[in-house]
Image (cartoon, rainbow, N blue to C red):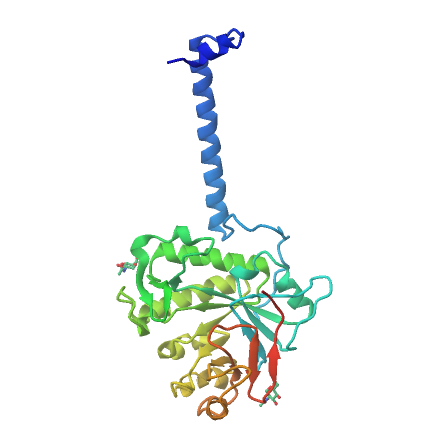
Length: 328
Ligand SMILES: *[C@@H]1O[C@H](CO)[C@@H](O)[C@H](O)[C@H]1NC(C)=O
Ligand SMILES: *[C@@H]1O[C@H](CO)[C@@H](O)[C@H](O)[C@H]1NC(C)=O
């Protein structure tokens, strides 16, 4: 077998280094590589801790201006919610339809875009949605979730699994997500899937776990001058109402349970209420629309009729249908 030296010699060049010098050089090179890898790992780790997570940093943005007070929306505040796509707003000439007061958008989808600041320029408030109580595989921080904190699959959402929301590791990850929302300039957060105790979760979650988790998230959000809403979780409304600035509810009319959330309205806080009637939003079943828009207990709710995938379309109870421009 011909070695390296042999080939060098055959090419007519003398090896310049002795075998021992080469060994020393190789050792130094290996040390440099190891240090570089460790440094990179540490860098990525720190980035992940703050919810960054590497990939699409196409537009590195300066930190958004921070709110000086916690936003308290009023009852009957108008809104649109889009979670399955990115809003299409030209930051240099911002415009958005419908002209509602609040947009609830997916935080991760908008983290490297100027959508939040564009909405602010238009005088809108922004609620940033993320899942706080479920594991999702393709988020930038997904690799940080410890296996032992992941429970059963969410009914109807095969990619998502319930989380042990009492675990300090999970809470730390969620603080990272709040920090990210804060850096983006979100006025509020909409942490989803905090009602594991009302579902088959595989972790033995109890109402007390959700109360404790939402109390923790509320304190962390408020420290960052962000408002927070309670998503669904009807059983714990009474306990959490004083700490929440609003509720986000899905299908209370369908389940004839809107009175459970009406204490928010009585306390002067809005209930952002979504129903999913057949054919919504552009061919809504009229009987369902009537039933959902006039549900007992839903007086004063900010009701919106949507397709289950929470796309660009919406219908309101006054019959107005809207199409928000999104990137396809
Ligand atoms: C609720 O807001 C809508 C506009 O979004 C308005 O037309 C309606 O009058 C308001 N209702 C109350 C009771 O303020
Ligand atoms: C969830 O986390 C808490 C706190 O670390 C722990 O006491 C509990 O045993 C965990 N639950 C499960 C089902 O692993």
